[in-house]
Length: 369
Image (cartoon, rainbow, N blue to C red; front, side):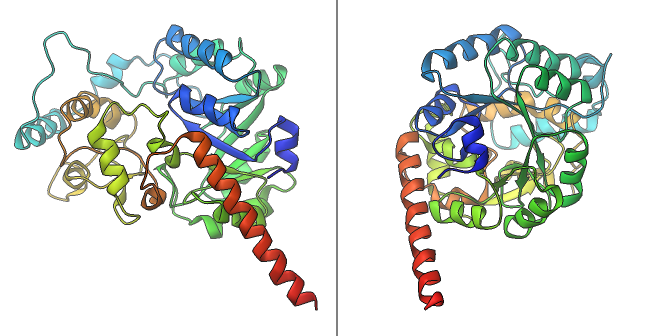
């Protein structure tokens, strides 16, 4: 499963995997793909350095990358406290009422509220980069589009390719103009933040818009046959995220959540602003329903919503409150019905890819007769 981009990066398979779990990213790299570690949850540079040290020790000298969440325009001089002060009391009361309705216990006194979505903040994201460029990462991806020009230049100075996600051909062209090296065409079916265009339509549009830049197809891809379809549409690889959530190397800290993912069908997700303030595909739960209900106050814009719900999400996850328990995940969740190792997933993807290519070759051969 080699393409020009995979050869440039020195990987066996053009399978790029985004994941918040170092063990998953390292396992994918060892399996011949390209692991990309998500950095948004790292608020302390030392924590990111610790996990990148671990990646170095467990990737056998093979390439891997890092994904950050960074706005294209600088947002300096704004603290987390400044943002917290913008959250209306009405929304805080709504959170309290929703948790009380479902009997969600409080955290113990002095217990940290868990991950807070602060990686979008200028000082946090730049602190992550200060750490990252001390390591031999080969790709820097940005989930919020093109990173600031000085970041692109800095990455290129370190010999690091820069990738950016796009939900439309217009966005993709902006990335090309900004000097981005790789465009990830992320379709409507994907988990997390997505646009409105499905992968089958989006991928060839983006390929045409940014040619000759390499494009990775993303969204709704979880089989080798779908990878073959993405490459047939002009992509030079695929960008997979959701499929790794039920691998044995993933660390969701919740057997109940894993069970919900394994049981979910492709129709059990929803694009909701409940988690971050931007439309993000996730499991549909009574939590997303509450935020999407017109009778409620509605989600706040990013980043207010993420800060507002951080403690609530931590409580829901800690106590595994099933009606509210969810996670970002794409429509491919309908295929995620067993726990397998990353290597097993890659093996299945490559077998499916080979079968699809053989099938097309047979059809093409008959057509030529």
